[in-house]
Length: 89
Image 1 (cartoon, rainbow, N blue to C red):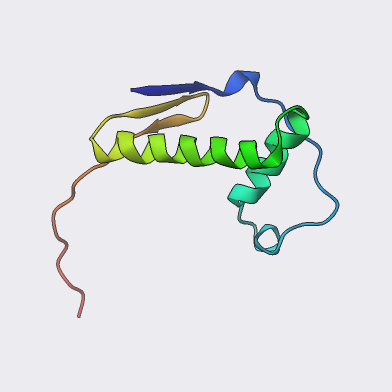
Image 2: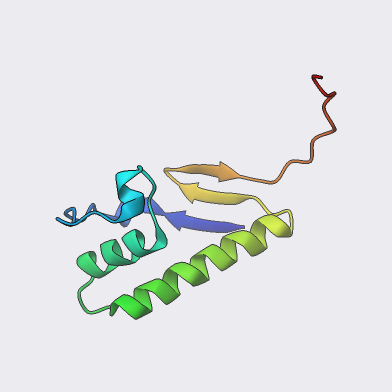
């Protein structure tokens, strides 16, 4: 089980220049890396990106091995196998 405590996270100020995906409402890995960099100036942007890659890899591995993923103050996630649904046509 992986647990991440989000209570220690603080919101960083928004960047003046939004990315293309930000305009569509999507949050990208680059957006998250810039937010980490803004909150912790001692962490280089490249290191923040590697950190995000590691976190996403751990989430994928946990869910792929049928573990429950719990993010404190955010939610729990697990993979469910559902049966087939009948077609509509």
